[in-house]
Length: 398
Image (tube, helix red, strand yellow):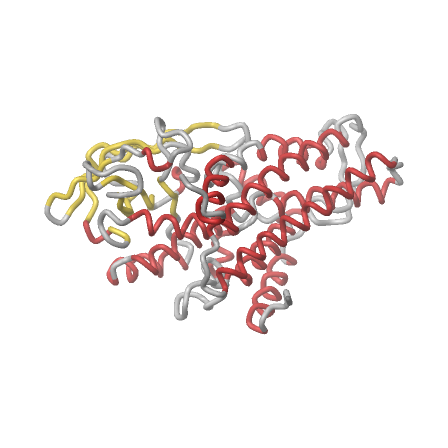
């Protein structure tokens, strides 16, 4: 097995590395301030527009939209950006939505949306989970009734990330009221500012906001249907597999652990055998997480079903991210003195003055501890992922 990229993929990564190098200490601090001000998970509009300028928002799309990149190249792109601490949530989300629209949208919808999406002018959110459904996506109650050339949508979505920043919400609805579970579902692209759409903030422990999105008799053009009516589960299943193929916390964990190692090396921190063994275990597990993601990407590259492998990597990576954050936080917390963070997310070697402020690595470790609590829930809970593995991977009876 070789993990070398094709020349086109290597050229993309070189371009990304060049982009990352344009962000020094002040630019990174400005990005972090923008993320905090927007209240969204790892999203900064200025960086999103920068990615759009370089045609990096959906490299997996065929030309002329994208670069016809495969899943492995996509993974490498995300890994390079996350390793530099860049805000990538909007990239992940809009990449998924671009794929759904390109594969399943009517020609007029594709012509309307893809140019705006790829230019960074329109952003998207995914309206999937619901208040009374818990982690069971298929227990959704949001209904869409066909009236002539429109659907009338009524219902509520919850935990909708970035909905307050989105122009469009790609929403799963039930179009056949007599159906159950995965039957009778459809996917609609709904204008986030349409009459009847209400978006309310729901703060989460990670420090950002998700949203409750209510649809009160919202009228949606029938041309905004993705795929076939009542067969939306096939559309959303592919999108969820694509999402789960990406790392859930592993790349951020590797960056956090690398910063800790550099900290200890720079300060001459004594590392006893117990901490050294724990550190080694985490390094090995994080490499396993990376290989699991690459395995799922390789299956997608060959056109094979990667649902089970994607769920395996999602469970392993999200739970590992929680363990890593907890360990790094505990390793740092007793040491509150101000030290030189030689591999801070500001990515400079300058001394950081901590007089009267919190050590940035300690603060980021505490933030990772809070944020990682959501990783086993978002994108489908660990329990749901294990059911996917049992069904799609092991062929066990339901």
